[in-house]
Picture 1 (cartoon, rainbow, N blue to C red):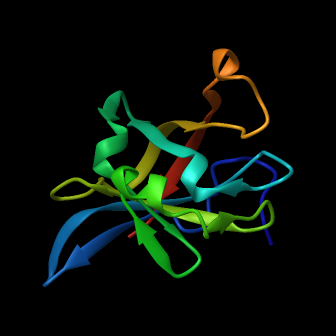
Picture 2 (picture 1 turned 120 degrees about the vertical axis):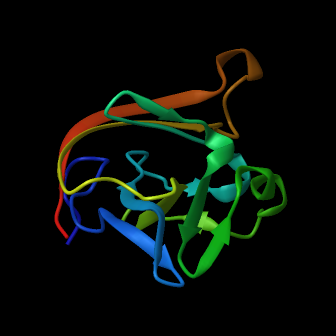
Amino acid sequence: MLEKEMIQEKGFKNISRNGQITGFQVAVRTLYYRGIWASLLEGAEVTVDGEKFPKEQVTWTIGTRTFTVADFPNAANVRWPFEETATLTINKPGGLKPGFHDFEIAVIFRASYMPIEMQPWINRASRKLVLVQ
């Protein structure tokens, strides 16, 4: 079941490859009631404990497919539904330490029916998350 907030507690964890912690993941939901076509996403800027991770450093998993911000313009047949989370993966050697973290996100997207002068839209959220290991 989805939480009300954009930033979900479930799914917040460090990730590893070949026994080494390579970064962390967080699940987010779109607050846009129509869902968002991936080709309209411009990425997400993530800040954890004051450390900023630019949108080019964040990969997205929507459904079973994984994208970089550069992949979005060509992902016209992929939709991020309102009722599903996307998993954001951020590369950070060593990951995050267990405990409380101040997490902020800005999801940047366009709406196909809005004039270009009113674009992009940015959904911002912040939340304190606990990493348990």
